[in-house]
Length: 415
RNA sequence: GCGGUUAUAGCUCAGUUGGUUAGAGUGCCUGACUGUGACUCAGGAGGUCGCGGGUUCAAGUCCCGUUAGCCGCCCCA
Image (cartoon, rainbow, N blue to C red; front, side, top):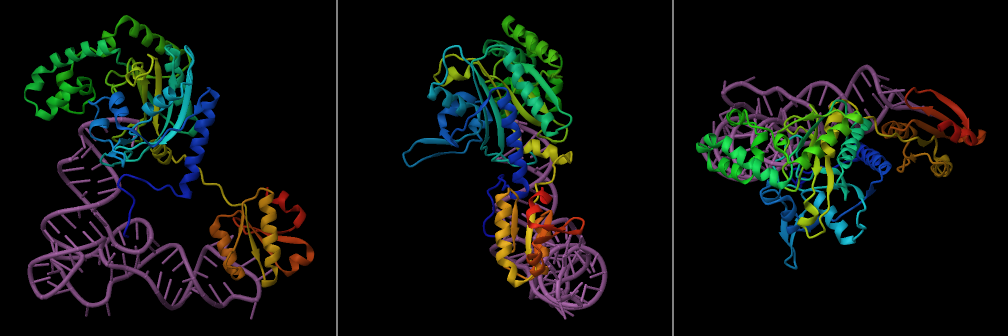
C-alpha cells in the first residue's frame, strides 16, 4: 500500500459513521433542550490565539500544535482545542448584549502532535459546550448536568464525575509556593526536566504517577482548602446544587487540568474502560479567558468531550447497536422484467424505503446473493408470473419465508 | 518527545536450529441447484512475508534503518 492515513488519524467508514451521526444527533438534540445553539468555527486560527489562552506552560501549546506559516506569512495553527476559537468567534460577532448569556454547542476535530495510543489520537474529535456570561455556580452545574445526562443517554454505564476547585489566579500563586516549599527536598535531586516542569506549573505535580513524588506530596493541604472566600462560596454552592440535582460526584484534589485558562471549578468524567487515558471529558470555569484575548471581562464555563473515548467505552460495553438496514432489494427473475424492477425500485424509494437492485443485471442467483450481502430485510422478486398477477414475491432474507404481496400492498408490508 | 512490543492471503493466525514451488481456518469466485442467498459437497482464484538496506551459497526466519499499530511514560479529550 503506497499511501496510508497520517499517523494518529482515523477513517470513519459507513459501518461506523452512522454511530457518529447518531451521537451527534443526540448531543445536539439534548443541548438544544438547554438552549445551546450549534456553532462551527474554522479548522485553523491565528497561532497566537492559542498561546494567549491556553498558556505557554501547557504542553498542548508549546509542543503539540500543528502550526505553519501560510503563503501570506501568517502564523497559523490547526486548533488544538475548541474553546478559544468559539470565544473568538463570539467576540468577533459581537453577539452578546451586556449582562446576557450565550450558550454554544459544537462538534469539532482538534489537532495535537502526540504519540498515539488507545484513546489518544492526533486528530481526535470533541463535543463541546461553552456558556458565556454566567457567574453563578448554577452555570457550572448546568454544564456538568448536561454531560452526565448525555453519557446516560447514549448508554455509557458507570462514570465518575471528579470535581475540584483551583481558585483564582491569586490563590494559585499562593498555592504554588506551598507546593514548592513542600517538595523542595524532592526537587534537589531531580533531573532538569522535572525541575523545569515543577517550576513552570507546580499544580501539575499533583496528578503525578511518580511514586517518589507522591510520597513527597503526602500531607500537603488541598488547594480547595486554601480558597479565597468568594471561591469557597462558589464551590460550596456548586456542590450543594449538584446534590440537589442528584448528580453524584467525587471531590478530587489532583484534578488540575492542563490548560492555563481555567479558574475555580474544574472537573472530569472518568470511565474505568479507558486504560491510561481515563478521562471521557474535561472542563471547568474560565473567567479570565475572554479578557485574555481582548474582550470585556466575562465569566464563562465549558467542557470538551472526547468522542472517540465515548465510543471506546460504548464498544467495550457492547452498547453499539447494529447499523440501520436496507429495506428492500428488488430482484428480476428474468431478462424481461428489468423495466418493472426499475420502476418498482423508484416507487419504493418515493415511499421512503431504502431500496436497491443489481446494477450489473446478473442472474437471479447472483441477485439474491447480493440482496443478502446488502443486509436488506427483504428481497422483492419480480418475474413473468408476478407481472401477470400484479403481485411481487417477497422473501424475508432472515427467515427465508416467501409470500406473494400485491404491488399496491407492498409499501404497507415493508413498513 | 522517551521506553517496550507487534507487522505473513480480504480477516484471524501458524511457519521448528536460516534450506526446494510460504500453509490453515474463515471469507471470496465457479459448479452440483435450468426462478432463490445462508447449510452440504466438489473445484478455483488470491501473498511485493509492512517498506529499504545488509550478512549468507541460501533470509518470512539473523543484523541495521524506516513506516504504522498496540501498551506504558509524558500529556490530555
